[in-house]
Structure formats: structure tokens, C-alpha cells
Length: 293
Image 1 (cartoon, rainbow, N blue to C red):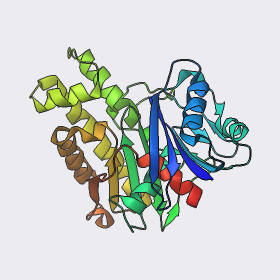
Image 2: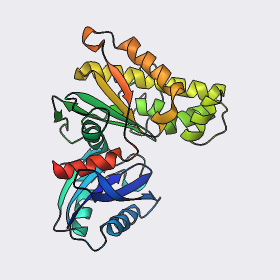
Image 3: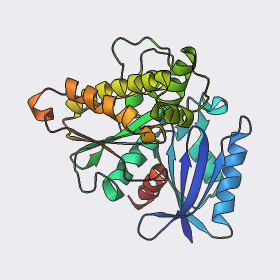
């Protein structure tokens, strides 16, 4: 008998077996295909489960989600953007298993509080900055879920002075300004010729002026969003992970400066914004913790 953890990301799926300590073992990953998305996810789960009896599945999914109906509608997965009944699909695959489902930001913040940079902290905001931007909140040691399960979805805080259209249908969202994908798009509009966030980060470290400007722009926007969210939540710790967040000082310098410039209230003077201590398995680890909870 085993419990599984499943991470539904914007560009990849990951699954593994939940270990006795709440960690994840035997992890496998697949890229999200353009079509037959559920088929790819199903095959991944069956491969990880093998011949074992599956008793529980914890799922962390890119949002928006509706935990009441078990639906996810990731903005970056066109085949699912209008809503896919993920919990029903997993339950059909493992009819005797208990299914726990949450947005990836909830999983992220659970993992950070248990195993990461927020260990033991009762009030924390955790962000992932990657292809998109998401987040989760723990307030007074309670996970903030919200009405539909999208509590903490910081990627759609509005950044003043920015008019970039967002995949959500609005404009000026921090995700539209500062995610890896958005930063690459902006840099290419300025004449940069690379194609990925990793390339953009390397170019910034090499002194490419456009790349430096792109990361400065992203960091400034993230810092403003973080300060706004910290004021709303009355938290003094923000943990940031994700692939694009690993861009180093070209991103983190402007991010910290921007957060400090906006976090001026007395209860925010000790605000700490720190990098995640976890690898790219944070959401998967959090999905495993859903099963435990």
C-alpha cells in the first residue's frame, strides 16, 4: 500500500511515492504535452504506482483551481484552461484512494514551513517565481485556502504603472510583468535574442544590458508585490523559490530594494525576504503533506 504525490505544473508533471517522513521518493517527471494532457499524467501515475495498492493521492496543481469541485484550469495548459476535473480523473484511476487536492501555492507554503526556510514560522508567505508566479499563505499556523482554494494567489496582485496584458484576462499583474516567461518576452521586445529564463539569467550575469534591465524590472515588480502582500497579511517572512528566482543578484538586488522601499510601516520594518531552501520538488513535497494532513 502506498500514497502518491502529484504536482501539476505549467510545463511539467511530477509524481512520487510519499515517504514515512513526509518526503517524496521515486520521483518521475514528464513534460506537459500540447494535446492528450491527461493521458500523459495518467501514464506517469501508473508508472510511479507500479503494482502497489494506492491508498491516497495528494495533488498540488497550478491554478486557478476550484477545490470544491476538484477542477484545475492552469493558464499555461491550453487543453485544460477552461477547467479539467482532475480529482474525478484521479479517483477513477484509483477508486479506493483518498484524494487531497490544493493549489500549488498551498503545497509550496506547507513544504517551506515543514522542511524549508520557514521551518516553525507561524506566519509566512511563500512564492514561486518560474514560468508563472504563484504563492501560498500560512497565517497563525493555519493554511489560508479561501472560498475556492485560490488563497495566496499573489501572481495576480497588480503592479502600479504596468499595463502588460496577463493570461488571466486582466493587465498589470505581477505574473505578466515579472515571471520568467514574461521577462523573456519583454527582453526580446527590446532586441535580446535568447529564448529562455535560464539564458536571460546567464546573460544578465555576463553584463548584457537588456538582460540586466529585464531582471531589474522583474525584481522591482516582485518586491512591490511582496511588500503589499506582507502589509495585508502582517507577516515578517517571505520565502521565494522557483526556477527564475534562482537568477541571483541581478534579480534579488532590485527585489530587496523594492520591498524595503515599500515596506515602511512599523510592523514591516523587520520584513525578511529570503530564497527557498528547497529544490524544485517543493510543490511535490507539499502535495505529500496534504495526505498527512
